[in-house]
Image 1 (cartoon, rainbow, N blue to C red):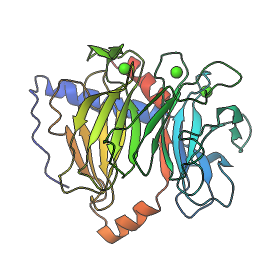
Image 2: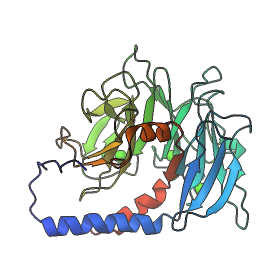
Image 3: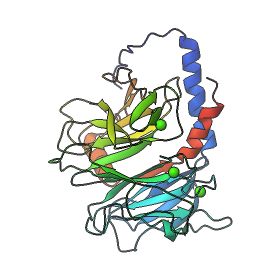
Image 4: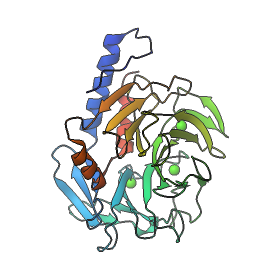
Length: 334
Ligand SMILES: [Ca+2]
Ligand SMILES: [Ca+2]
Ligand SMILES: [Ca+2]
């Protein structure tokens, strides 16, 4: 494993800080009762809900037509507001990009699709695959659908979930591109709570407002870049991270979670193909120094790189429920 990077922050209470970090991770592991996984490229498009403790399959479904083998990306979120997270399944390349929502049914090993939530995030003409994330962007208690083009310009679209017979409008609530008009490498996407925003302004960088912001990672073909967007009004770039080394042009994937000792989500960035499985964590609090990561891991350092690249291409997609993860935030002492 690489040497631990220098931490630029002043550590006034090292014992307390380390204790809180460990406690936070433990709570997440215990409270997240289930994990969703999606089939990789080359397999039938199965989505499964696993018991987070035992790994046992609790329920599954064929997310798309059985002959589709372009892979399924997954996210979890409570789109219907019943406080139980659903599973969002997003199609990989090879069919019109679509996101479908599945629900666990009591006493059944079959996931039920909530067909009213079917969403074509980029219309009917785009078939390059879609990434998916889920989080409440408008604080109505229903987590909303966030999509990013896996190929092409990496357009990000956000669809609100509302309490109606047709819960997802055909028109996107917000739509933007993060890496310029000529960029053609696709994008990855996540949601993160980065503070309080209103009408396109940062109101408070340390207090969450229960409205997530959008994090976008660059695809292959440009120096690795991560941007965060406030979408309270016209989407606005509020943070840019240039992770890894500038030589890393294989794309990055992004995630978020509470890592350091504040209430603002931190940004997790993993290198794509050729990146050696490097994962870095950056402080999400706006105004903090994001030039250096809080932590850096070589997640697959013990594997030979040919094996790693092969497994990356065929890897499954995996997600845990953000709503459950977030609930630990309120139970962690400040
Ligand atoms: Ca739900
Ligand atoms: Ca919402
Ligand atoms: Ca927010």
